[in-house]
Length: 107
Length: 121
Image (tube, one colour):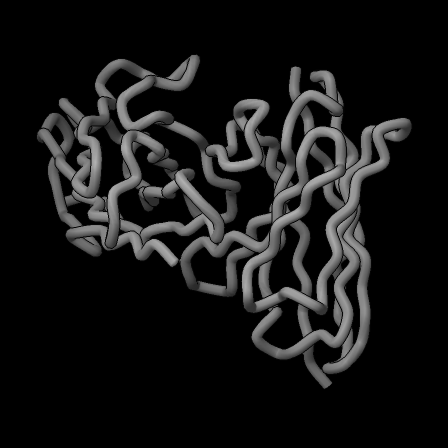
């Protein structure tokens, strides 16, 4: 199974800050990586697919990069509505696996 | 507009069974893989199962293999998850999700609101 390791597990940041979240796969997954945002009591929302493609309707302050084993999600200027938990997911092979999540909190 | 509406969750005793359903609308149901993802209270996301667009291929997490069965009824635009021999560790919100492409290995671009399954005596 491919293990997905996210870091940090939580980050405290101010509105307007740049935030970077890292996801590392235990083996190469090319660009078969997605990023999701989840707010309390709500389902996850797809932000990025294929490592760097922005899902329709997602603000351009979100961006993804990486290939192989190392990936990043960047929020260029944190907005109040961005405070949430973010998950990466590998879509390279079964079993599909998610990272443990990164909680972005208000500083 | 894509919509996914789950139902069937509830309280069940250990060893019992439950069937979840997800009615889909707003897209060509047979063209996309569909899956179930669960989230235990206060925990992260865990993939459970995926079925291909045609229904001919199914995949399961080891934690549910042999106990859960995924299926789809294309005529009713409905995805199902039959769960048996339920355990306390199966307690979670179960989300129905649409695959973002034709492949079975994919990200999920639309999600239902989730249905809570509680396994307890």
